[in-house]
Length: 256
Image (cartoon, rainbow, N blue to C red; front, side, top):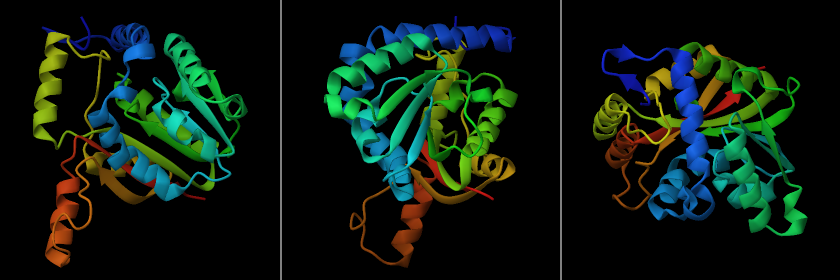
């Protein structure tokens, strides 16, 4: 069983092993039937993940993707940057991600992306070696709160001063999502073994605590302009609704 036992939370290492096993199982199916083929999932990424990343820009940048899993971001955006490193702790997922990427792009684009295995709580890269780091729906699957915080600290370390971090996570302010996840964790039916729901205010606080300046928020509740008449009241409503999205996050700048 993943997630929770009926009498309490499993020990962190047991849950960590469950998450690793869940991702290994997931790697078996993503080659032909991954989330990259799901239009609703891709639309959600576009409104949150890709919006924030595009605000930072990719041109001529060294990019680190923390928590690669399926190479959706790589297939869409890696060609725009100088070099992209896809990083994940699960070697099974990473091998499949590399295979999917290599089979999907032309030879002259293959060198744009490197695939690297390791633990994000101790990134194997020199300090100030990246212009942009991204982590999309990944950090929440780390069971231990201290380890999750270390990922933020390590991300700040490997970014250049003034470099950007685009991070998205599941939102506990989205009540239907929170109820579904709590139930799935109790019953052991979560696809990835474990997930921690952040709130927008908690994520902002952690970013500030670990050396970042949050500069823009987004979620999959981002409404296109002109869906509502444009005036101040509608802008306020649009901004308020964004904080209730299921997938939410910030673009943050690494402080000097």
